[in-house]
Image (cartoon, rainbow, N blue to C red; front, side):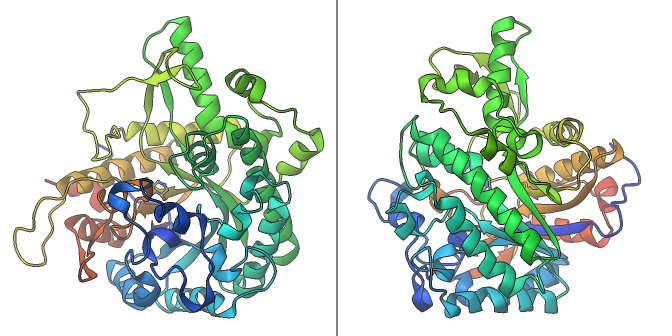
Amino acid sequence: MPEAIQFPAGFLWGAATSAYQIEGAPLADGAGPSIWHEFAHTPGCTRAGDTGDRACDHYHRYREDVALMGALGLNAYRFSVSWSRIQPDGRGAVNRRGLGFYDRLVDALLAQGIQPMLTLYHWDLPAALDRRGGWLNPDSAAWFADYARVLFRALDDRVQHWVTLNEPWVVVDGGYLQGVLAPGQRNVFAAPVAAHHLLLAHAYAVQTYRAEGRHRIGLVVNLEPKYPAADTSADLAATMRADAYWNRYYLDPVFLGAYPPELAEIFDTAWPKFPAADLEQIRQPLDFLGVNYYSRQVTRHDPADWPLAAARVRQPQQVHTALDWEVYPQGLTDILQWVTSRYGPLPLYITENGAAFYDPPQASEGVIEDPLRQRYLRDHLRAAYAAIQAGVDLRGYFAWSLLDNFEWAHGYAPRFGLVHVDYATQQRTPKASAHFYSRVIASQGAALSSITPP
Ligand code: IFM
């Protein structure tokens, strides 16, 4: 166990959410529908037909939620903006009432001493743009930059951390390759095109920010370290393919100006020839990188797996979350060190980390014990600290998530929140893990050495 933990001064202690997962009221005040509104309202797409229509009603209760963050001692909050609240048709006219919501949210955060980290795109593309092909349309990068400019002009006087895209890997894998997330396409020829346009959209937004903004902008990726199941050439090659697809697909173009060579092998005839000028453009210097970390993958060669021929080997001796994700804190240290060594020493944030567990029933009124989540938090924060000690320039940690919320195709069943939400009454109750996190924050991490969750 590490001793005398003390995170650096200025470290951001936050929690993260996203618009469609918590806001509710998706069509309020002139907003247009998003692809997630349409996907969730299509029978069979989400568990039990759950939708984000009400979610945590954060659109109406944001002041209460910000007060809760203040009470827990957070000094940062990562949230996303719903594009179709700002531009109901995805392009052109700006809806001032939609913008007003985020304007008030930012002011409320700053009044509590909480730094906003704003994500421009967390999966909820305006449905009107999907009608035009969505991320498959080469104009999508310019649409995104225009939308981003509206927000830079409105909020950069108060927002110091901007994120272009959240987890482009999930957007493409779930939305265009496997068809399990909006917009629900399952097309191996479409997926690499959508990925390329997302990367261009990211780059155009960064370029726009350099002209309009005066703070910091970065990208958020989900990373999952890959370890070979056995020291055989087949498993080692499978591990490299999985690593290329999950971890290097977006980072290599952004930082090195080239796609990983394994992608042409994985996509085979579906892999297009991309213009060299696009890759030059995608390589825009960033102010920081956000890493979302949940688990690792022990990988073996498996010809039945599509498209990687690389399967996950379950580790039965390990704790798994309610979504069956292996809990593996060491992977967080490993992946942060890997990013630093492969892409250079750049400021990093852990922009998401957390776990869905089945919380035990409330023992008494207002008390929700969640020992597994407390332990998860403790062990991952220790792993983050180990990365700092190993030389990683880690500037902050955002727990996923502040509130229990809409977990996409899984609906409301998995609960990731530090704060329990009773969806019938919308009552918020901080779980024991929230109180634990509070103590960690108040002691700048020192409590991680001494507090042992049950
Ligand atoms: O809920 C999601 C979030 O929207 C993106 N990252 C992973 C989380 C847990 O699945």
